[in-house]
Length: 288
Image 1: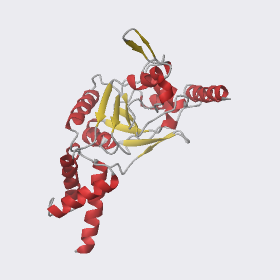
Image 2: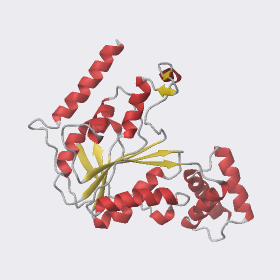
Image 3: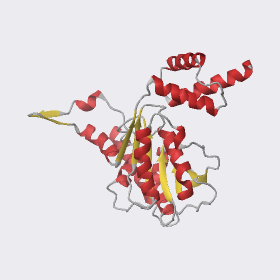
Image 4: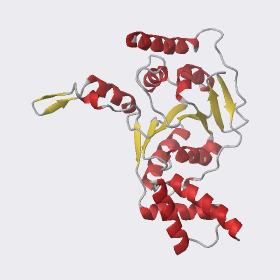
C-alpha cells in the first residue's frame, strides 16, 4: 500500500502541473495595481492582493546584519534586472527570517518588487503563477514561509523541478525565497544513515540522505540564522519597547523582566523580545 500511496500522490502532482498548460486552465488576471503583496489561493487558483501588508523596515531588524547584507545584495541585483539566486533562509526560530522578506518588499516595492506568498499545497500550481507573471515589468518573489516536506508530497517534486531541472524555462522575473527551520527542508531520521557506507577514507551517503540534500542544494543562496546572544536579545527588546511607545528605556527593572520573560519561554529570539515588549507596554499603561 505504501508504494500505491506514493504512486497516487505523485500522479496527483503530475496532473496538477499538467492543468497549468492545458487549454481552459488560465487563471484570472489580478489587479496588479491593488497592492505590492499577493497571496495565492490554491483552492480557487487565484491571486488575492494583500492590502494591509506588515510595515517592517530593514533598519528595524537587529542582530542579523550579515544576513541583511547578503540577501539585500541578491534582491537589489534582481530588482535592477540583473541575475540573482533563489534563496533559502534557514535556522533558529524567531530570528527574523520571515520579517526580513517583508522588509525587503517595503524597501524595494517602489522599484517594482512584488511578493507572492504561497503555501506548499499551492506549489503544484507553479506553472499557473509563472504564466501570470511572465512578460510583466515587475520583479516577483515567490515567498514560501516555514517550508518543510516529506519526499512524497506533490509540491516537493514541483518545487524541485522548478528550481533546477525542469524542461520548461522558469520566468526570469521570478525568484523563490523560502524560509524554514530545517536546513534541508525535510525531517532527518537515524535510519537514513544506516545505508551509508565507507570506501577507504571516504563516506558515501545513502540515497535517502542524497535525496534530502538535493532540494535545498538547488537554492543558489543559503542564509543561516542563529540564536541571539543576551545583549542582542535586549537590544531587540529595547527597539520593540520604543516601537510601542515606552519612553523610559532599558532600566534595570525592564532588563530583569525581559530576561525573566526569555527564560520562561526558553528562547532569546526577536519574536520573544517583541512579545515581551507588547506585554510590558500593555501592563504599564494600566499601571499608569
